[in-house]
Length: 71
Length: 279
Ligand SMILES: Cc1ncc(C[n+]2csc(CCOP(=O)(O)OP(=O)(O)O)c2C)c(N)n1
Ligand code: SF4
Ligand code: SF4
Ligand code: SF4
Ligand SMILES: [Mg+2]
View (tube, helix red, strand yellow):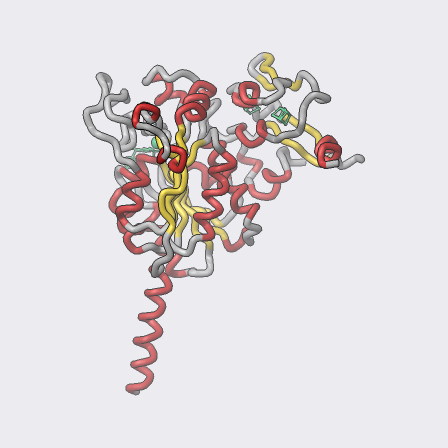
C-alpha cells in the first residue's frame, strides 16, 4: 500500500540546475542514476523506489519527487 | 512557471537559483536541511527571520524566502540578538560558517551562548574559508593544509560543540551533510529549544578543503563523513583504538535554563511596575 502510494510520486530532474557533482548517483541505493555530459540522468524509472535520498542530498535542489498532478 | 520541487516553490527564491556554490558543495544540502526543519515544524514563514554573516555559507540567506538579513562578517549573531530582542515573537535562525562564527565572530558566539538567547545557530563547518580562497580557519584540523598554511597548520582546531557547551548553550548537536535526515532532526530540536541552540553541520568544500587536503571530490567527502562519523552513544561503548580517526556526531547537550529575552523582559516589567507604584 505504502509502496503503491510512493510509486505515484514522480521523480523529476532540473537539467538547468544540476551541476553534475555525482552525489545522487553515488548514493542512490538501487543505482538508477548516472551522469551524462555532466548532468544527471535517470536510467530506470521503474526500478526507482522513490526513497528520496537523491533529493535529500542534492546540493542543488535539482532532483526531487513530486506527486503526479495528472493522475 | 518557476522551477523546482514543492519545497523549493514554497520556501526558496527560485528566481535566484541555481545558487552560486560550486558543484557538490555541502552548503546546499545543509541549506535545504534548514528549510526542511522549518517545514516539518510548520512554522509561519512570516515569523521566521534568517540572519547570516559573510562567506559562502552566509550566502544561504539570499536564497531562502523568509525575512532575511545578510549582515557583515562575523556579526550575524550581533544583528540576530537585536532582531530577537526587538521582536521576541520571531523565530530567529542564524546561518554562518566556521570562519564567520568562530574566527572573526568568536566573541559574539560565546556571548550569545552565555546569555542563552533564544536563537538557533547552524554552523556550516567546511573547515576552511571557502569564499576567500581556502585560508585555514579555527576549525581546520591540526596539520591540515590551507592557502595560509601550505605546509600544514600548527594551530590546534576548536571543537565547536565543546566550545558551545562550555560557553553556555542549552542545545548542542553535530551532524553532517551526508547524514542529512539526522541533521534536519537536530535543527528541529534546536528551533524548538527555548534558548541558544548550536547545530554544527559538517559541510564539504571540494574546491578548497577537499582539493588542498587531497581528500578528493564532493562524493569522496560525503563518503568520508559517512565512514568516519561516530555517534556519541555508540562511541561510549567502543574501545579507544576503534575511535582513532573518527569524529563524534550526535546530541552533546540539552538543558533547560533561563533564556535571555525572557529574563530581560522580566526586569523591564519589574522596573516599570516599581516606577508606576512610586508615581
Ligand atoms: C571584516 C572582514 N574581514 C574579512 C573578510 C573576508 N572574508 C569574507 S568571507 C571570509 C571567510 C568565510 O569563511 P566561512 O565563514 O568559513 O565561510 P565559507 O566561505 O567557508 O562558507 C573572509 C575572511 C570580510 N568580508 N570582512
Ligand atoms: S528516489 Fe531513491 S531510488 Fe529513486 S533515484 Fe532517488 S535515490 Fe534512487
Ligand atoms: S546531486 Fe544534484 S547537482 Fe549533483 S549530480 Fe545529482 S542532481 Fe546533479
Ligand atoms: S568554495 Fe567551497 S564552500 Fe565555497 S561554494 Fe565552493 S565548494 Fe562551497
Ligand atoms: Mg568555512
